[in-house]
Length: 298
Image 1 (tube, rainbow, N blue to C red):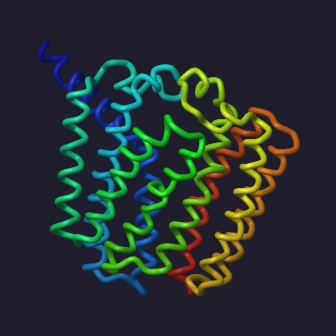
Image 2 (cartoon, helix red, strand yellow):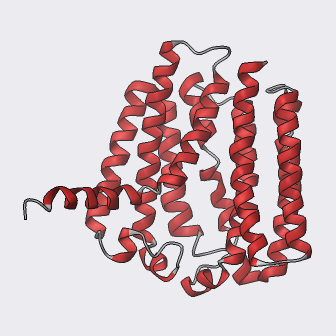
């Protein structure tokens, strides 16, 4: 019994860790970090680095809390979908009370850290993002309308705003441009996923766009959104936030995403939808990395 205790502890830790949706959280913190870096002109001081690390930790904790709360609300839906059936709440490995307590503790720790050691504005914006994702999107919008991704995307677009607020103590136009890019990136990213996971969403009862409006209409929306996103991705250069280094990256990545969307619209296949979804992740990650490189080189 005692010999198995350490392995049991590790197993329980992994279950709780899985509730935070680590891969999603990594992208959230990365986008927040970009906002932090861009808010600080020149090379950051040690005080800036310390503040950024505290802000990243606080944002990670609150984002993890929102993800765990989402797992409670959607455990029945998750159990019906191959993509999410492995989650501890869907499998019944963790109960509602355990998960809710875990979510509350993470949210409290993260909010306290942000309020005391970063600034109140960042705490309130992060908490508002928690409410927007965990309650407005998950509880209200997702089961109600096929536009859930579009409207609820506002919560997912907040990380660079949070990062900017952490370092600057305000929300500047640069942060809003970054918000707009992620906001417009979200629908084609998730609809590409929904296209090849349509049967899962149909079984779950969620009104995702391919279920309610069909494959062809969804493909058209993916294409149109990538065109609008293309224009938004040029705004950092037009506004003067970045130089030609970012501009080249934005042009190449946005052309690539648009090409995937065009091919998807003209000649659909599940494999192409998967490739489009994967490229969308590369698009956002490399785009923001290019902003980071551009900020320090020029």
